[in-house]
Image 1 (tube, helix red, strand yellow):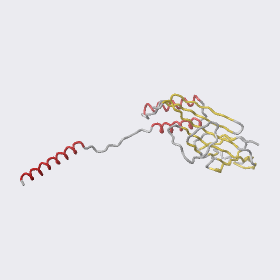
Image 2 (cartoon, helix red, strand yellow; image 1 turned 30 degrees about the horizontal axis):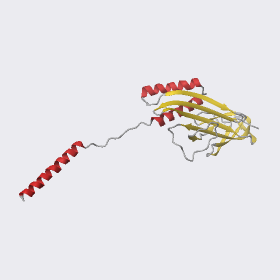
Image 3 (tube, rainbow, N blue to C red; image 1 turned 180 degrees about the horizontal axis):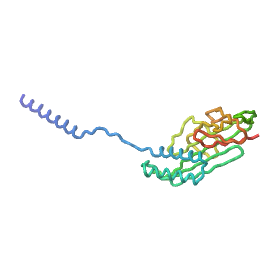
Image 4 (cartoon, rainbow, N blue to C red; image 1 turned 120 degrees about the vertical axis):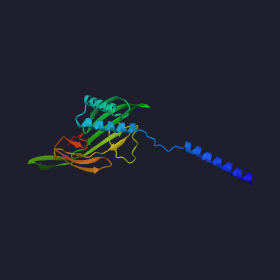
Length: 223
């Protein structure tokens, strides 16, 4: 019996020592933080492109806005990838007006492109009617307008079921249908189909509306 009691005592000492060692090496779980700078930077560049178009974009204005963003990155530690190039252009046709802003960023995978495309495509004139506004009579022409934004970035996930956007350049990205309005109050606008970003608009000839980001929306009257 004394020998068995000694064995139990030894076993107890071993278990106690193991518990002490386990407690000494035990660490509470610590949260891990990861900066999603690719998505954040792409979103910042989308906002920058829209701001440029809202004030009448050209490459000099775009360069100034990019430099402001880089200065903010340096002072506020936004952890942005380097922006190696920024370029703005537009395309026009008989019934379409498109704006494109391209940014090249140097990621860990190499140079990658963030593109912001804005497209306004007008239909044919359907009919006309008169409208009095602030004592002035306007002849408004009814037409349809397809207006959409496309935001393409390697960091933006594809959005199943997104609206369609008829643009000349082949892009895969997020399609957004901004609200449009007339800051002058003369034209009339009504959303027809959010799946195709199609609006019914009534304008007094070739006319410029604005979207919710104050980007110009050019309507070309045909017929």
